[in-house]
Length: 456
Image (cartoon, rainbow, N blue to C red):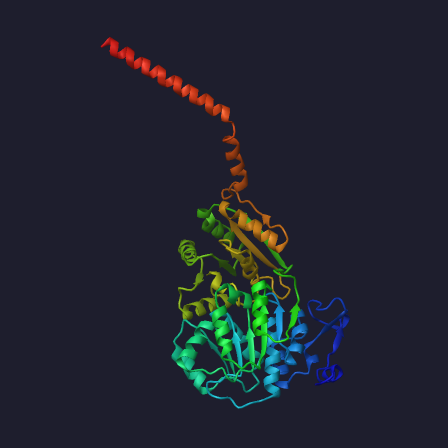
């Protein structure tokens, strides 16, 4: 076993004073120093790729996770979206694969990265491929919504890193097209989301097919009790890394809410687009039906928009996201399926057309904006029925959300209306009096009827 001093000699750390840097933000204010990627003594092929990506200083999660992960340590990391966690787990894996090169074997990847959605699988494949562009490695995404035959062909040709959604990977295992017995590295990305989506059994089934002697890195935006329980089952003598408080949000994001009746939300959205000249806007709805309905209402306003949800084919979803990134469309309407994994440059506005059912999902949605030190705005349209959901979000994020009332669209407070209704129903005496009057009226009417009979 190597001593700590030997390890430090193997992985030297160069610290740069704040005064000498050109970076945007300080990564470690407690020491007055920051860490840069060139201090890690990475393989020249990896460092060259990072230079071309423009990577200089490390983020907090990269500082804390890369070195222990590179040494083969199992890790449970709490890192919010947009903090650079992909590099935090990908670079240590790539470096170890470089240090211990092996001939690629058909159908037997060396590294397995599991992720909950197709979009995130594609995003990770694109990003990690940039890090490994000068290395002789093959990286392939395996996800549903597309034909298996093309993926099977890539697996047969040999892949080094498989980035997969649990369901599609299980299908390949059942078909016998992939073998996980040679996996040395396992990464679970967005572990909390996989638990929320019910993938826990699939994940455990898949990892049973991998060797017990492997390195496992588990990254999660929240460290809940289920996540801790999962880590206890899958990790060995792991190191816990946390760079932000649970459910923390970037302080570069401004939160605003517009009280509005449900049936007026689309009209208000179009009005705000025109008034504020918003261009690149990501809109979240809670259901596919709501997304389709919003798209229908945007067409008469001639707003260039596209839609991304589970009923759309993978090709259609890919084109919608690509067009949005390329500024070919103004609005991308999406359901929760796109809440994680989308990395969109210069996204200034995220709109919650409908508030999410879980307050935690609000954090993931708005994580698409305010990234890398840029300013962003999280906008929520809140109907009277959603006010309590907004209160729950405020408690979760630890700050109030500014309400903006627009003439012609504002609705009364749900609590105020309930209080008024309650006050109206309180005075029991008036009800008794009214009953007495009713009885009196009935008697007088009956008397009149009797008189009329007598006259006949």
